[in-house]
Length: 382
Image (cartoon, rainbow, N blue to C red; front, side, top):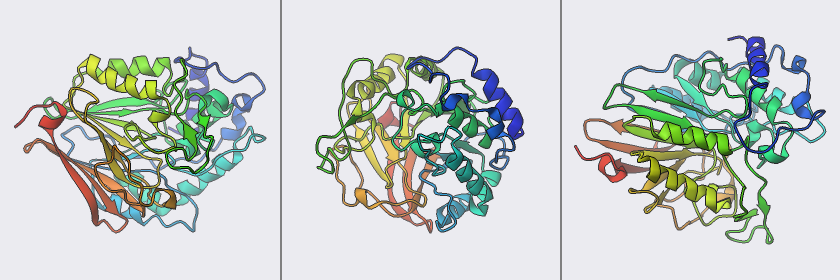
């Protein structure tokens, strides 16, 4: 679908009832910016249709800078994997807006630049690709929608760039979450893309910047604070009740990890606990979490999260490594972290009944891997 058509669709959807959470920005804010700023908006290449048969390999990644001086070698390796599916888990452009720019011109420019990168185009045009946003394609560093008036314009940009058609599962008026189930019975993979930005409440700033475990933010259990918003929570509950043989829950920020003071679900302990409770009460089996954001890769696990352990495979960064994660050890980590450019591979062995979570460097070499038997995540043995 062409960019203008996508924006017309998004504008129509904006008149629908909200999914729950904070009120929409007041008139006169960035959400009221004229749609003309989105005309002739850049688009990602048309991606192939999602597969209908069994999925055995998925490539994942996050933190992808569009600037010319940033190499995208890892994207070329992801393309060479010839995977059944690619999932870009947020920060797919780096265009954070400023408060005095209601047209989000920097974010628009970043999308234009990414659309011109041949490595990006090579992956998206050859491998069926799904995308979710994080803070930098949402438009505000560490931002949440509760205190960010640009969220509606940012969503229209996302919808236009990623060709979100009216029948796309992400075509919500308030947020870009969506669900897909791929494969025949007995080999069904449910992909759940969560939106951890649109409805998220403000974070509690640290009282001791850069102190271990308190680097940027503190835990906040204030009643009513949310990551997903009530509408998305209700949607997630309904999705977890749908039949599936393996469920991959994609969260742009780490869901399981504890022990650091950057963004994570643990900033709001009741929300983290609510996710695990929902897995229990819905009886959903085979839940594995995929996340990004941290500028390094690692696997975290919560052994007592549900009737089975829940693993969270963080894959970051495609080309934006950052030294803050160097040597980080957390009580939830089950692999060491890897802080250089990398991507992730999720391999599903239906006959052997295992799922392998593997980090690879930008040249495609294995960095670490964890083989998770289906039986360990509630799916039964061979």
